Image (spheres, rainbow, N blue to C red):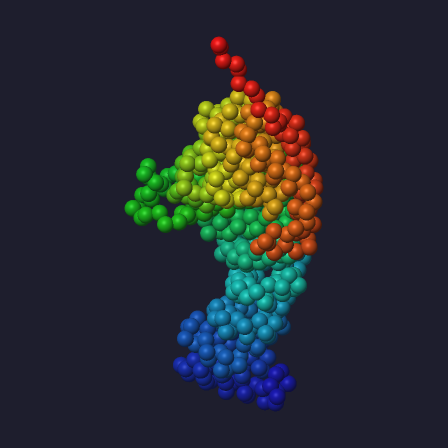
Length: 567
């Protein structure tokens, strides 16, 4: 048996070291395996790890590592070696594992040999040592670069991701960031790992519970503001956290200097983007635009963070009062078109929609609402359905203001919204109804609805979508309710044919059978059925009943007599 207790161990090692210069990777790996099996330490361990590292750098040698059956011994070195005593040996050992784990077959083998667990233990040991000293160990920092490079590869495997949580790797990496934030290579590796892991909700919850997470990542944004590859990953992580964890939204926002840091980065990259782009929208070096530029990608991910944070009511209301942010968003919309920069523009508009939801006293959105409404016009005219929906959502919030309603009336947006009722898209029709509900508050705008055929279109929407979408049906009824506020005759208000159709539909849809019967081609489960019945009962029935009473009470089958002719 090999190991420290092997007979004639010293003589055997001397013989092996004499053969080590043979220039054949297969032979060298077999020798290295024997040396590692003899549990060497000190310089002997460092030298053999250096040899293995050298061989692992050549991709063509990958298969030899499987033949030599050496992977388990390398994992054992990570498991059993004290980093404070043999740090250099571990640097070479983990460096070899970095190269080897880039091979999918090798990564599976390493995972089965508990490589993740071994690296997690090593991370914990280094962090514990640093916690007990006045300053982080620089040599351990070099080791961590290699350790995190291996973990970065292992994180590609979905089977390993649970281990990153159970073994504490997720939290240990947050500690590493706090200790070694000056090492950009190490920070890039940590952010790459967290970028992959935060695609999982469980990971986001764990990270959000660690307050150091937001403090450390904001510090990276401050320090490496112009290092695009690191900044974009940090923002991707913060975007994932704020998307998947409710706790993350206020935690990130209330972290000291969070908005100042984020807006500083946004301002920097917007300025870089403007400088990098010529007047005709082409990059100065003559390359045609095929997707988001690096600067645009940073802005896309940063704005996503702000949009996600603003979902939280208190945070959203506070962000809506930030004039610098609103100015930057408007500046982006002034410089970018949805045709050339779709993802960026849609993110900006979605963020404005979130912020415009909060009608707070100090809202910067409300103070610039007409300017925002003007910026949205180009979205309605573009051949982009998602852009139309997002712009309409913004208008749905902004049209609470009479000033915005007047502006949109002058720009014929009311007629555009009526036209969109014919789109056949549930989202487009839904958002158009949201705008029309508010526009119909103003008596002077009501004639446009009828002139543009809007009453008939709304009744068609009610017929087409009613049984499958009671929320949309309730919005149609609310639009017609607002429209008919000054009604004297249902026939004059809606039209005779439209009145009869509307009464017939409302009577039909207010019967309980309408909601108890699942529409054809619908695969509703029990939960969905319960939800639909709840919406029908709480949202649709109240407004539909009121509308039916109003229409019916102002409707008569009697026809007025013509005035007598003069004889």
